[in-house]
Figure 1 (cartoon, helix red, strand yellow):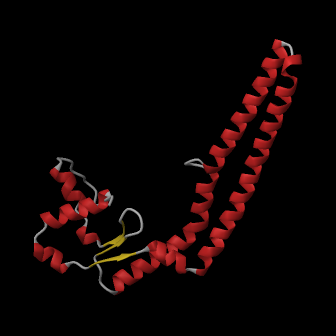
Figure 2 (figure 1 turned 45 degrees about the vertical axis):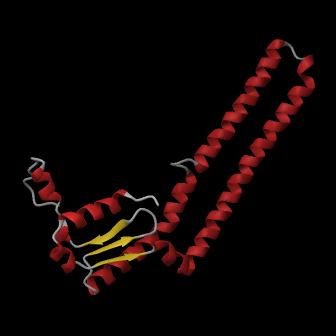
Figure 3 (figure 1 turned 90 degrees about the vertical axis):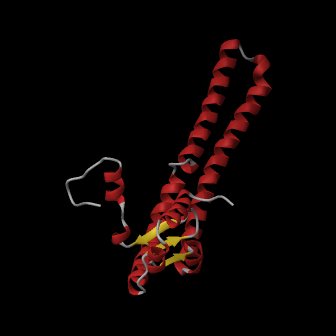
Length: 180
């Protein structure tokens, strides 16, 4: 089972802090995948994303068909072409292939349209979940709440447990202002 860095840090802290400190803290977790699956608007968002993806795939398939037609025409007439015309047609086919690859990257790459669309559509739901987590954590007096779906992301943590300034000072970095 793969462990996230946050999980490992949590284990390290557990070993460094006295048992009394941990006994005083209240830790909870959520499963955001489960919560989202139960939200009625989530399935609507997934359907919208699926429709968008289907349209993009159709666009990519059309480019692929064009490429195949260009290759087929080229192969059928290749023997009749002059070397210059043959080279020009090969360049046109290569350009169309690059165009298709760029479209795939633009739509589905790491910074592509799909990622941005997903982020835009899911952000309001994620914000609702986060707001609810903070409300429950404060009402039920939890010190930390993390999301077990994914990489054990901490969603809420009481400020009194923030030791960032202490860590910086330990490293010899001293900050004048009172930010944390």
